[in-house]
Image (cartoon, rainbow, N blue to C red):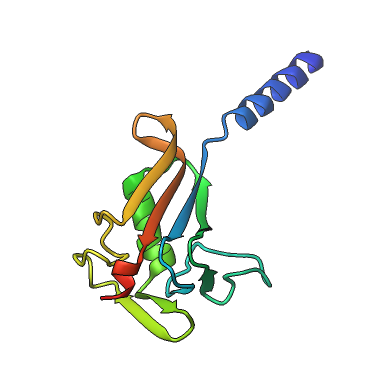
Length: 156
């Protein structure tokens, strides 16, 4: 009887490990402008970059013509477009975000601006694209939300 119990326990452990329903989310800034940016955010309830790494102080450099990914959330379960938007709004962006342009000018957006075409808080803006790996129907095991910055946005 003892070998059967061990065999059942081993099978249960393998089954639980094989069906790990976890997800990861990342926020991407796609700097299509001709300016170097520093992205400064006010949230952070789920974003824990490693100490000494880029972004630990709430700012992140985004060179001209480059994309920068900020992996900021993950847990057990699944994600979706609406879930990653909520995570970005409350977990990363917080009350305000700023783009420091070439180290001199600053463009700041506040959480109350949910309708502005260029606002990072307007998740229906054409500046946003969503991508994800399916884990069933609308649910995703990985998702990214990309915010595009260009010269037209910075020169307003």
